Length: 165
Image 1: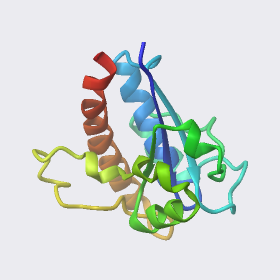
Image 2 (image 1 turned 180 degrees about the vertical axis):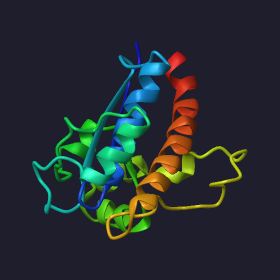
Image 3 (image 1 turned 60 degrees about the horizontal axis):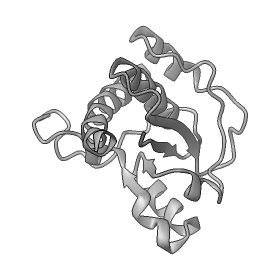
């Protein structure tokens, strides 16, 4: 049985990437693909290693039924480029940071999350990056959830054919 391993990546691994991980875990569970899609998250920076996701991210996620409390911040490492099939960044700065440390033969694994939003989703069509809510208010965390839900649904749809092949 084919599996796909995914690591969502943002700067500190306390807002966007754990939110994407939590949303994806939930949607993968609903799709009954939990044994086929392996999910993790990491940050390009080392500021929040071992810390839980931002309380505001946990609160917003919890209000929609996503559990982030057990997740802990970690920094992306060299082994991750061999371990994961996809390293999905939240923005262009994190794509650049990943490319700096990624072996050249594995750079095709690096993608932006918003690339997976279906073209039919007019709300996010054309948005390249998941907004960074860290310095803003609660509405930023809600927007991150909206973006992650749309993109993760599209990601599952994109992965489904290769999982069933």
